[in-house]
Length: 102
Image (cartoon, rainbow, N blue to C red; front, side, top):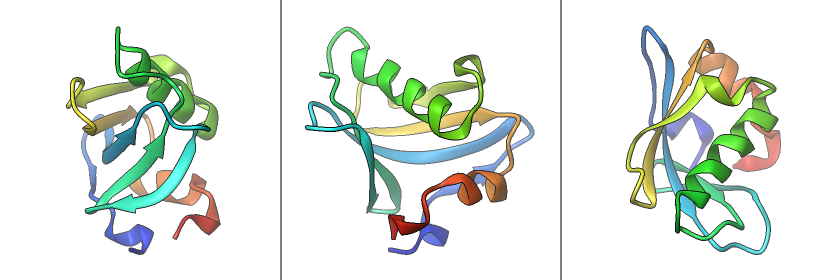
């Protein structure tokens, strides 16, 4: 699925991105898409909010923005999450993703 098909929505706060998170992965990293969501693998287990914190840390490092600008808007107890990133546009977010992600 091409990156343009990811569920991403511009809001007055920034962008909301649909994520599919796979906890307890061998390595942290983006792994394409899953049912219209950007797929992210994280090494952290899905206990004590560790996987959610790993998601925020991953995107903070990838985008070069503070962790305080990123939060899980919905799905904190699910693999299917909506990530809210403040202060960035949808086009800027897509531009910062790795090119080989498709």
